[in-house]
Length: 409
Image (cartoon, rainbow, N blue to C red; front, side, top):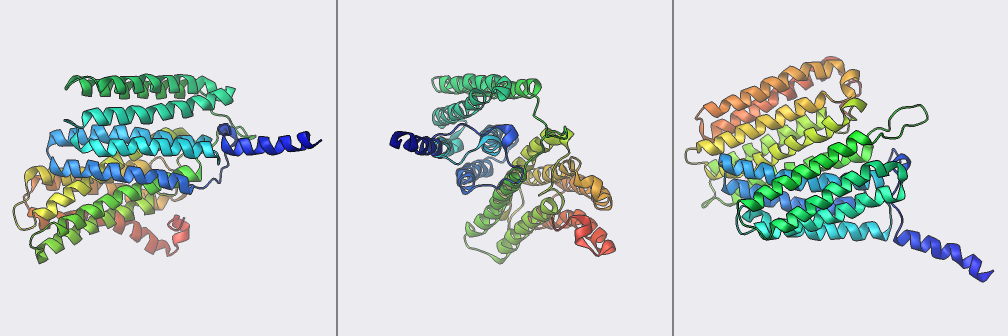
């Protein structure tokens, strides 16, 4: 009897240490983001900071191309980890172990990413391969323990295993082959994702409706946007701090840069955050965040350079980087609003701001054709970001009830 009574205790203890992934159908709709996930995101803060500094040092179109390519690679790792923990995460020691392994691998990526292309390719390739291998184990386990999910997890994890092998093998090659192998590996990952989405049918609830995006995934993406907006603040402040001597003109330019960040925050968190996408546009909603955060991070790099040129002409490549990235960010928010359920409930708000967002994005891009210098360019950016803000406020003033517009959700 003593043995039998003790058996459930040992079994329970074992599950707390190493339990199977949660089933997709069993995930709670009201799940909240955990402190472990927030801790996991911190290492990506470092990677994004390194990428932004790299772009600030190389604000050419070639530099933008490398920035987008490397940011996508980092994003693909982050979104995979995020989706796993949101769909299949458990509260046991094994999850912590896998999370910390990922963090160590991503830290290696952060160390070398600023020197890509170049001497950092070897370390970046090995760090990315190690992180991808952890993802392979995580996603393979979902199908191993859940037959319904196996049809998707097998091609998904297989493609990532091949991609990890390609990244590891690329460490033994030289440029330009090493970078071509990276592109091939990322395409293999994307192909695996598309196959998994194609062959897998999500379970439905008792009413026959497909399970919706969880509030925790929405919150996680919103928090990632906050992280990237933080890089814009960092770019403005570092630009001011790096001035020798620190001048009043430089302070004004830096504060204008912070107003740009505030404007983007206002637009995104009033119109797109904390809102669910429609069931038919979930994937579009998810991946529209990619150009948004890439553009925001690029704005942060451009702001650093803009402040540094506060008392001299603004180079054309810096001006075009600033206006193009900001225009893409605004256009991405406009596209995001078209995927939301809230668009149907708050017709007046979204109909009014749609034109303002489109006009703001086009006008911001057109500023690239001017030569107004740092102050003039940033003043124009702030004013043009004010257009959709003013449009939203005009609807609010007409209704005089923020709750009717969903602004307090």
